[in-house]
Image (tube, rainbow, N blue to C red; front, top):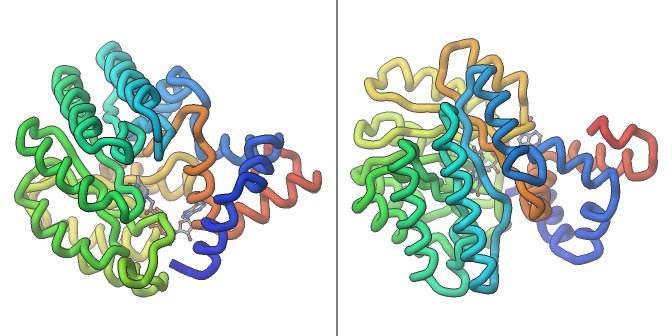
Length: 309
Ligand code: FDA
């Protein structure tokens, strides 16, 4: 992770920065580039537009690091509602969940139960559940909860972060469990004891994990990146792959590249976040690309139309 990324993630953590984004038109306009809207209807409408454009989707109800039980239970219920809505549509969509939104930081058992319930409902609806990977305080518990739930329900997936030193071991352990594995670079500020620090190191780690994942037949690889070098490597590895796989990208990020992959005939799933708790998600998207912050600064001082970011 570059010094810039780390600095942005740290700077955006304080309440003044939060207000600068959540309390200004420019901040909300920037969020709308990466977030489908505040409501489930907005999320479903975006998923429908993407389906019409030939893309799969994963719906993500925004929210994380929940610290009280009622909010965690609300999040579980809202996800049930997402699945109920999917049952009424013919959308090829699944859900992406964050375990701290379902209570992992308060009580591991509570998150485990929520995953069970959502996996059961998702199976009834004929879809799957992907567990996002959050910061390293939660990695071990997230891996355990995934392994346990996948063994019992069989319709889960998990995100693994290439930057973590532990990921090669996790990958080896989780491939035989089936389901799907989403490989991403990793979006949180982590210390050197835990994660690789430079962009080059992270890309190299992604590249070697990618080779292993694309050779695995037991699992469905989900290659989550907008990095063209890694996408090209995936195209090459796909030539000798027998099973299926998919590319995954974030809503609002490199839409032209998304269309290109779709036109080439690959399965492409777009991660569609919706909900009012968009600030932490936005900070990670800002940290990934300095230009996003420049756009924001310009629109804040009125040099750009707020809607143009
Ligand atoms: P990289 O950051 O090198 O970007 C490659 C190019 O893509 C950039 O040069 C730029 O053009 C464009 N780009 C990338 N990010 C952009 C942005 N925010 N705005 C504009 N352009 C941008 N992380 C995590 O820790 N846990 C998780 O569960 C997930 N889940 C997840 C799901 C999906 C579907 C995706 C695509 C990503 C994640 N991530 C994630 C985020 C991931 O770890 C990583 O931070 C981002 O994908 C950015 O890394 P890239 O691989 O795209 O490369």
